[in-house]
Image 1 (spheres, rainbow, N blue to C red):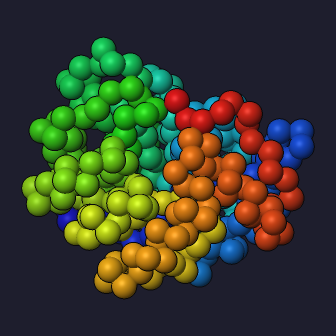
Image 2 (cartoon, rainbow, N blue to C red):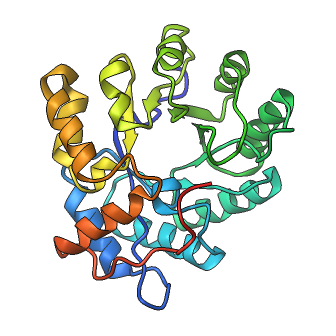
Length: 269
């Protein structure tokens, strides 16, 4: 890999614990991180599982800071879900100051964003944001999609260290891996792990509640754990549009979180 390790292995896309007043519950963050730490290789606060699209600046800052404060040596990859390059760069600079090791960000929002604008977005974010960049390849948040040729161009940028592939097309993921993009390709949807065994790692919501299973899926072979994976995805409601609510409910039941509060904005855009 050209750009170093690029965070292969298991990265947990953390939920955002909130108090009844809507602030980040720092003690809950500490318990959550402690519960997953033995099994994961990196921590990702404030992306989609963390309701990143809906967090206020205060909540986003609080979650990234709390995660970094409890990381105990694990790298923190700060999620950024903002509609413009300028806003993404501003949050990246803040994340750098909070101790994040990298940022994870989608393209700018909107179906009219061109492929060249997507490329320039990542080029600018890497150059001006102050941190390495993991490309968040998805459709639901940004409302657009990177073409394979554009994604490969982006992977060649010196600041790009990995791709979190959450676009939902396992054939396209396998093609990306086969193209040898020069950076790790990380599966962002746990239920697609059996169909993309060639990936370098995973960035998954399931690791909030089943970190040992996620670690076993990474060390593989995935086929040994396919039934357990399917059962866990169903049990924890990961096919729901508000999957993070189900995760918070389970974590609250276990005593990891003290409230099930969410931002109250419904499912991801």
